[in-house]
Image 1: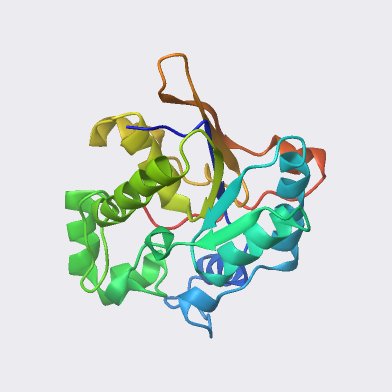
Image 2: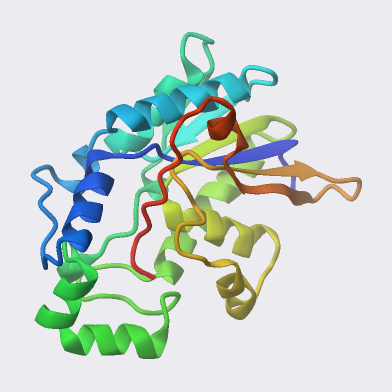
Length: 235
């Protein structure tokens, strides 16, 4: 298979939904108060600053193309990162966030109180195969990513491509690109590791394979004295 020269992955900047979820968890609430549908949740002020910091990091060696989830917070992150460089941004619905079904907008407490049987089933099956009613498992998201990644390799071989999407997908890309087992991938999973606007990169090695050389890095945010949000989805 043809291969990209470089692949970068950026989680979207801090969103207003991230802030609402953090407040709900801290206050012991069962439901997260987010008025918009998930696809329409925008960046916070801090999120826009984070995305601009990504842009300054990219300026030294810009990508040939940016591919992002169609969700507003990822599109805004891509636009702030690209700025007026002229780098093309395309949207791919296969990069959208994981759908949570009946657990949507519930905190950890909300899931335990309102759907205790689902909390137990999630604990037994683990996140990779647990699918909430009406939602998706990590394995379901992997199938979407597998198709998107294959198209990028075919259509943009030998180019530098930046993907802007959501938290869980960075683990799943490592799973796909490095041929990890479920167990090996889950060893990488740590709450708060995939900070908002953290950067993961892979480079093509001498054997023509993409090899990870940066994982969930936030040095660019610290250099810009920009806050690195560590809002995580339930594992």
